[in-house]
Length: 243
Image 1 (spheres, rainbow, N blue to C red):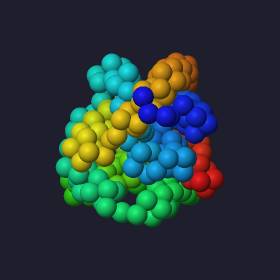
Image 2 (image 1 turned 120 degrees about the vertical axis):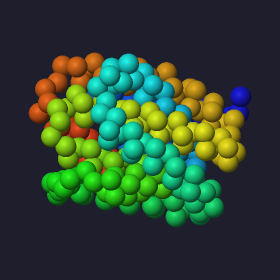
Image 3 (image 1 turned 180 degrees about the horizontal axis):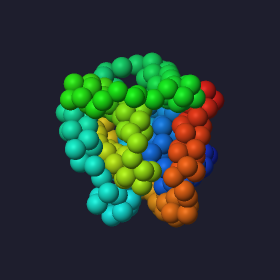
Image 4 (image 1 turned 180 degrees about the vertical axis):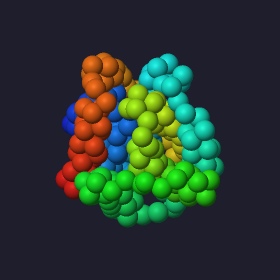
């Protein structure tokens, strides 16, 4: 095992606790909270690799409840398009300067938080061209920063469906797209043994807190869900500011 049992791993575990509770309750936000601080503790590539491994675990454990509630007419095309454009983003991640990628990650998270704070939501129709643009942008962001969620979340959360179906669709989208990202990272040899060991040590912590967050969601109303979900996005922006 590589020499990974140090104070950095303790800090990473604390980050995973907050991110896991977020993921379990809202169905999203784990990666947005986890990636910026992990990029400071380690490197952007390692942060994205660890986050992707943990997000895959968290998403898979939420699938049984989400699968029958997912609106595939929207989530299917978004997931497909995101997956098709993810390799381009990974190429940029591998080729870019690490400090630049840290700033890009921070800007994306902060921008999404500010948009959410402003109260803006997409109110237009779900036209194929708009869906294509959102999915493609999400794929580029997913591969380049590990954060493909913001454009999709703004798009999906604008719908008038109840919180249960909204949350299910978001969970399913992330389950599919993080799997694609993980496969592309492996194909690019961007995941090292040390990254896998760190993710393996953090995984039980992330799994437990994600499960706990899911139990908390079960007791929440639709109104509370939306309020907490938006608050957690603000927290993601604060995490980027601290970084």
